[in-house]
Length: 405
Image 1 (cartoon, rainbow, N blue to C red):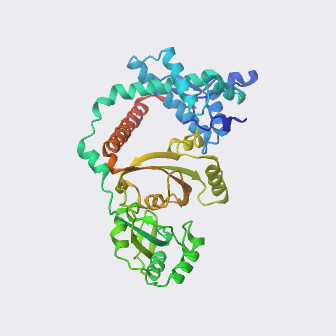
Image 2: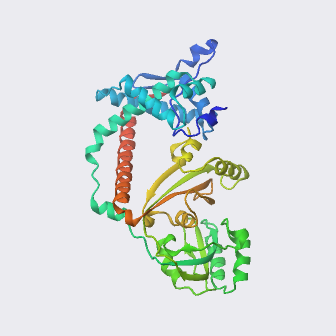
Image 3: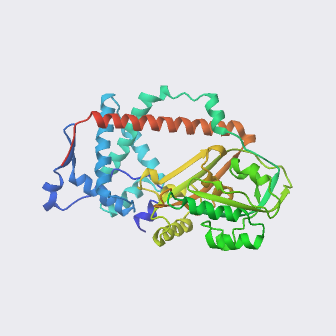
């Protein structure tokens, strides 16, 4: 069994350093950078970069490794200034917690790392640094993070219309600054269509959605699943009629009404929607699409996405719960089509360089308002703490004497 399989449930990359041949020890252990006169060695940079490569992290791995090792030095210095100490018991618990994300015992995880040439001490160092930084952030900023009832109310937002479901066809056309005029012209022409057959033909010709091969036809959807700004526009349609072009983040959407009816039971209003987005480099290239298919076939739940992104850049994966009104329209539209743990690969990033794998994690009904308020409160608090932590790290970096070789 490879390391990639063994770590499939882990959350993020560690501070990992592997052994090197003795003949290269002198050069490898010379400083690649110094942080307030504390060295970051070529040994550390080289081995962390190799570890990232082993777990399929993307980007300039040597550059990423050096930057993160420099950040580690700053985090440890901040901890020392506050007198933060991590006990052996807390360290062991942290290592066990980290290994458990890959469904492994600590000993199994260390054995898997050793098979890749990674020194167990480097895993301990990584966990210790993370625990120190957590304590630093808590000590400095937790007292500043007060989430008001008004902020929670605003985050929860409105669940929209209920009691109706719609049978739609869709056309999604990507827009760039260079193509905007042409796309809007085509979209306006499509908006004049009243024939189901002609709309289906147009979807097959110009739509970028995954439904294009089906003539743009969607299954029945509760109206309140759709982005809130779209709901009144769609509600006005009669069968056969088509919406004007509706703006998404980097695309326009056009919908045709095929049927509308009352739901057999009242529609559930949602206080929050949890979803994951994994950003795969390469846009809609064959390689990126193949990677998306590989991911789709290897996971069952949103939690599995953490393992897929193990060691990858944190920005490549987001899993969050948001009020429906706060979700970007293009993502909200894809989520509307998905049931729990289903996946869409219809979207790309704004510049087309990344394929967005969107996974529906779950919907929180408004009847569970207290639970959803607690979830939103925690999300707001963690987001604010993270912003404080990032800002503080930037400050430490600006104030430090950092010399890169």
